[in-house]
Image (tube, rainbow, N blue to C red):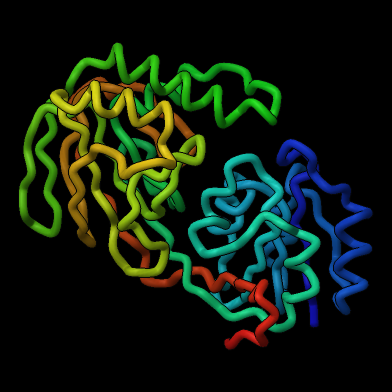
Length: 295
């Protein structure tokens, strides 16, 4: 089996070394070719012929693979060694890499939908979300990354500050042809339930249901959202949610983000079209309860 290990050597608070990962994978019966995700040629290597691609990194590294991998019939195994690991959590992966590796041979395959956003940036694929308003602005103001163990807490604190200061923006959004309008502090088009600093913003979102979750935060829910951000794992977020396959609207002002990439406000109203691509990733999910799994 031709196996590639694409590794981000700087991911996570206590990231494993390339040597440790290669040793554990070989002990599990795999003989991968190593490739650093920081190398300039990683895209070229990724698109050689492989039977299995193993991604050791955080959400950014997994998203790189999703955007660059041309042959989506090739199974992808995620070793979550990032900080938030939103993508890995969404497909049901634990962050115990040493427990995951020996069970890769008996993993079941799960679909991971890939989004496509068209706008002034052209076409860009995404895994987590496309967002407009307070969350996008908070990401744009995050500055230099804090020490890794503090990133989630500081990310949530930064968002709380931005939420308290945010001005509402008018949006008219088409969801499968039905228009929803209002003054919102943010609009997020989600592929996953968690986004940003591990925020479980939509319990209803699933990575393989073929649907996008569009969440709105009304200005009147600002105080509830601020309280929720102090303990977001204790209760559902105070957002309004709609599901759909095709999303379209005009972006007029405020920041935008696609996953962790931020875009400044446009000079004029710009059409935005968002949907899921037909072909999805095949993600291998080992059974940590000891079962054989299924493919």
